[in-house]
Image 1 (cartoon, rainbow, N blue to C red):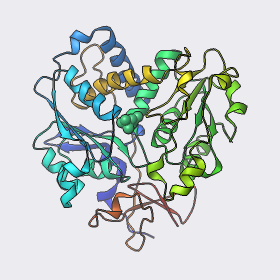
Image 2: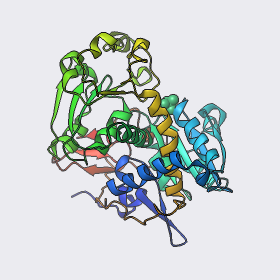
Image 3: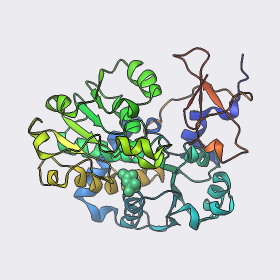
Image 4: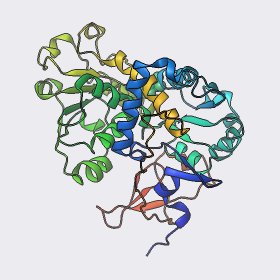
Length: 389
Ligand code: CP
């Protein structure tokens, strides 16, 4: 029997921490919000679009810190625009090199420092689990703005808002996910989030080498009996799709440049291929695009990836309001947070073997694992979810 470590009850700890009796929420993965809370954010988002003046000073005196250890255009600037449009202000850094991370400062120390300057923080980090470590040590709400190839929950909120505005609902949809489904963190987060809606079917379109990780198939799709197929041909999948979610092959996550070059042109969406699609099938892409969607597709009325960028700013405004407890009436219901109290364990003899895990650079972090219900004897790192057996 492995020792139980109450300090590392991952979800109970990370989802919310307490400060002077006040509950502080973080957003580390999409399951940190209930479906009802997502509905609340979508309703606030729609209201922001309808009544922007109502929101223009609602965060006056509040400060957002954007802590970006990895490049970004959309996520960082949409967070910053979101806070500015709410009347707040913004501080931060846009690369690890321009912060004291370059001198070896830990994520835990950084967030304690930032907590003295700001009211809320959005963190992007190349190491998986870094925003979770920040949340565990933070005096202010922390938002995961993308951690390695792991999760990107605010991109998921963006995707849900885009689909909701285009289709009018988030259930009974066949969703095609195409490209790099192994390293594409936006795909992982979107599957987790959509797995809670009824009538969802996934078509996973990728080369075999870039398939969705087993932990998502086994512990989300299989466990919840969500129908999915895995195919390599986009043309074959196209006619049945309601949404086509294209993704970039994530060059920066490959261990071998040769392997990247072999796979980089696996999918290039063209107008000709779209002749196979439904007239109301929308094309989403988290962006940046490299070449996986031909620019000739941009004028197709079904191309929704720039609408998606707009939704990204709006839904981040709604999220900031929620985490700062500033959602205005009539949307300000106090909804219960998700119940995610899973027992966790620490095993001192195990080591996470994922080279992208935060434990590879933060040597003093305790190695911590949770047992895998579906695989007796196997464990997952609580930070990056890599399998250890
Ligand atoms: N979609 C997304 O995360 O884009 P950036 O990398 O530009 O932030």
